[in-house]
Length: 399
Image (cartoon, rainbow, N blue to C red; front, top):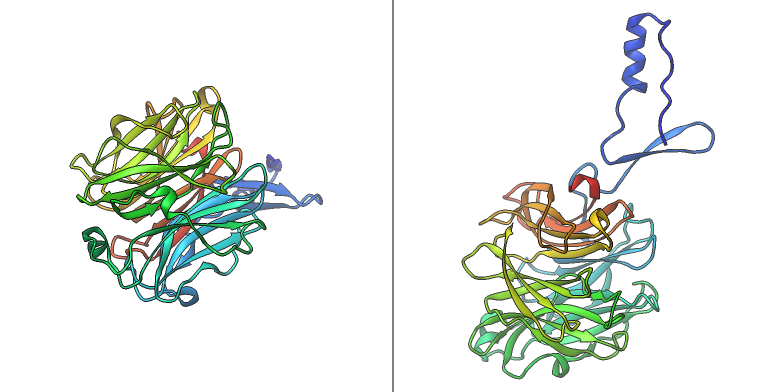
């Protein structure tokens, strides 16, 4: 709605200036104006318009640290924000629970933590949710390990147990969750040691031969300590899961998958090699196999997880693919969203969310004009893993 400015031409200049301070000021960036029907107008800001908007914060609700965000929209109003609630510290192992917060008003307010999975002092983590668009059911993939085991002994084969893979379902839009069901033997080879689902959301393919297939990015480390990205897939609405394709390129790690406009899939991978750029693979068979495309030199990155998200399909600006990560060669800082309108061949614009510390992230559609991002951050570089912020940005601001 556009404001109608009053005519002050016949008033003394001082009064005009005073009135203009109230009525002629520009609308806040990222805001909308709406009327209550009685002529009154109210400025509505979007979540995160004022900067960092922590919905998970160190020390909140019995957890000393929150990490590993994942974001999922389940209907036009309800969003789910997943995280690991780390009881004692920010370590990747130990006493860790899977938690979720729900928003029923499109991200303006959030519930308290809903604990999805807690197993004593063991590690329950790596949330990777997928929405079944046909039924509205949420399928969550996750991993478990004994809380006394660390990544070193797990990769050496000397750990008490190993990394195990589970699926968890919700049929009421994230309010309640069923008992975790183990799927390790269906999605993990016997010589794989470390294993992680996600982190970040999976997808359900929307078009083409493999329509409705669910695909989740994962990674593993084999017995020779070589790291690879891979996917797991489900063709029966998340009931059963099987191992999909493995990236032919090693020194890859946490990854996210996106559907391209020509029916192919893209896997964007954390790179543990020397390039300080992201690695990319393409699948033409719904994730069953992957062809290594190479290093994307435009996507500068430290060694860290990132998010790849299909915003919309179509021609020109309607064909929107988004990528978020800390856009720095060496440090986890400067959370940035990049935009492509040619399926990731080129990245034509970017938007910096925050110049201080930033690490893992996940994106989701917010509206027809905006994208939402859930990301780990702190007020400055010294506030590492201070919390997880939910913010939104207009697509036009990324171009």
